[in-house]
Length: 411
Image (cartoon, rainbow, N blue to C red; front, side):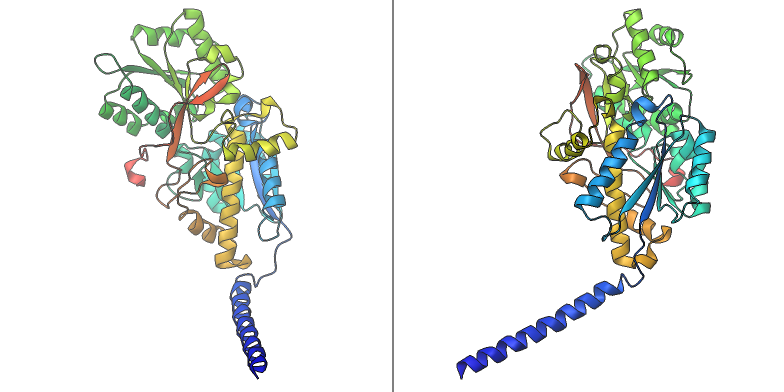
């Protein structure tokens, strides 16, 4: 008799569980009512052979490796593989625009357009709205605001240098305010730090910016500009460029015998230092992620597993290799959350933006970086300072919250 009761109890429990699972399946499947696409396209346009290539060129292998990892180990987006379409614009805006016009007409239309060149992302900001896509790209005001369909891959350039000059000021041992001079490319990228907000912030924290010098993106000689800066008795130099531009500054300083600290944004990373490792000793750069030289960090271990698996070389080590990873992981998170909430039919720009605007403290690979977005603030808000030594970039700070450098009208 007891055995019969036990059997009845088990049957009832199984029936109840079945009803529960059926309801759960129904609720989940309703979000996926529309048939899955065969693939999801994303597009990447960068400079892989022009003046930005020493730093930006590594976007290509980074993108391929990251989506390889996502498709293989994370199952893509609910079983749908993501296909990266990668185009080289060779540092030429006209070529980049041509590539954009090509990829925007591919079927299925790319969900995201990743642009790794500031002048190109500036030119495309309004096109993203016309073509109903989301763009991820560099952190310049002209590329991001007024708010539309654009998001920054990292904090804005003025914010990067703002955290650097604050750190320098906090460690200033001499009397009086440090005197700083700016020497940077005469491009929308180089000039991105020359904002009213940046200069106001410097004044607020007690940093005197006494001179600004510009030079061309293909200039290899900047002695004239450096002589003017030295005549103004600056204690520190600020720049916002990478590769050949930073190399020109450091070579000029060496030839002049002028030992002055140089602070740079994300473009002055491993790819730049590798051009002449000894030349870049005692040089500082602001980067928003963990770095290649932190070999025991779990996030770097994961990245380097694929780096070695796909036979990447030392020349593939740059911040943009890492950026390609965290951006792919971010896009993967956004795609999954959008489909989960709105279904495959709801995988559109409007819903994708809703999801992005609520990303908070996203830390891919257990600590690679930290990403928060809102509708008002379209860039991540942390960075850390590194010092070059023997060809390596060694962190001298942890993640620091950067000051908000958005123009007041966009807050």
